[in-house]
Image (tube, rainbow, N blue to C red):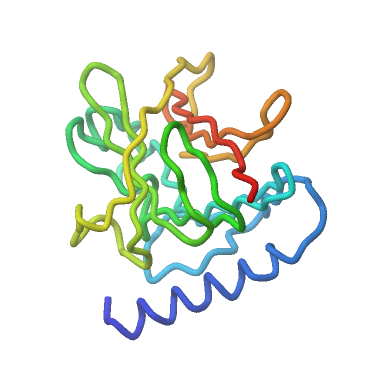
Amino acid sequence: MTKFTSVALLTLTLAGTAALFAQAPAASVTPAAPKAASTGGKSPHETTSRKIDGNRVILVYGRPFSKDPKTGEIRKIWGGLVPYGKIWRTGSDEATLLLTQQPLAIGALTVPAGAYTLFTLPAADGSAKLIINKQIGQWGIDPYDEKQELGRVDLEKIASSERIDQFTMSVDKGPITGGRISMMWENIVYSVPFAVKKP
């Protein structure tokens, strides 16, 4: 991917999300068809968004399937397609993009308003960390610059009662205030709560 293509992709993504920031409805926006521009990957792409406590949080990510696109066989995800102990792009193709209008407290980490890349680091014991990186517009993790990390937070893990064939992310409202970012695939749901930090 050329530098020009990366800049063009980032410009299109940010231009598209500007309209979402301006929207007033608090309902989740989950387009039926992929809306995020891709620079050549084969997985569907999706933009999901929700307004939490007056602040819109947006995720732009690639949605790979468990089935191998060449053979149709079901692949092992955690510890297989997504290796333990290695940083993962949290989806497919371009690394996952997080945008927030206002500062967030994700776990114990303060995330200022702006755009970030989300990575995941799963471990063999079943635990995983969410990595918030300040560098955006990356294809996958190559190259990955650890110096650009804003920080890492522990993800909560629960087992899914049903197998999830396609990688899915969501932004959901909390029971009273705040929200939760979740990622679901195979038979596992990883998530982390967040709060909107008011001035």
